[in-house]
Amino acid sequence: MPFTLATWNINSVRLREGLVERLLREEAPDVLCLQECKSPVELMPTAAFEALGYGHRVARGQKGYNGVAILSKHPLEEVSAHDHADLGHARHVAARLPGGVTVHNYYVPAGGDVPDREVNEKFGQKLDYLAAMRDAFRADRPERAILVGDLNIAPREDDVWSHKQLLKVVSHTPVEVAALGETQEAGGWADVTRADIPDGQLYSWWSYRAKDWDAADKGRRLDHVWASGDIAGAAHSSRVLRAARGWDKPSDHAPVFATFDLDP
Image (cartoon, rainbow, N blue to C red):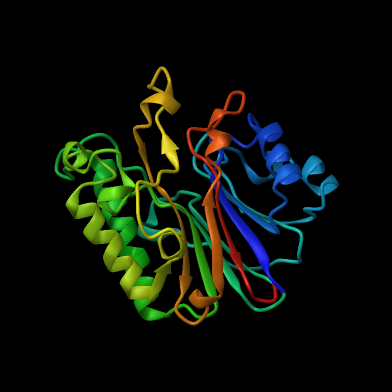
């Protein structure tokens, strides 16, 4: 039986509760992973999501920052919540679905504005976080697992609007791309989105700074869906719901979807 999963950096789940409701009503993924919830767990909205059939949740939260949550139509068994690099941030939670598939939901640090850890602590934290993820996957190689989230890196040249112009911009620098590649390789992860959509420009984030984000179309693919090698072949129907970036008072990210022909 197939199940569909979506990942979305919501940029405040309380502020954009209505947008999450709209996505659940109109798209009805079986599992929705949210990042940057910006709320303690006990203050995250639940009643409206439960009314739409999403009665299962695992989450980690913080007041005003970070925060991750997994909403599901199916029962969830919490597996882990890592504090990689000991940052004290709510950036990861993992849960197991009834069929034995584990879903990891990540929010990798953005890294600040300057791609130099000597002068920008946040960039160093980002690289340290990725290294900790890499080491965790080397120590315990994922099986029957899906990794999703805002990884805050656009790795391919066609994952950004201008490869040349963004080479020195945080999210597309060679050192970040290399770090993400090591993390992916360590876990034997397959990039599900690009397996389905191998060619062409593809974005999931557009800056608020653009007066007309759609016309400018200066996007980056920061949000990802990966699968462990043993189930990667079961994934299909990947897409970015670009229209959600144009909803009223939107997140600057759009949801990314994939379907898996596996028991949930």
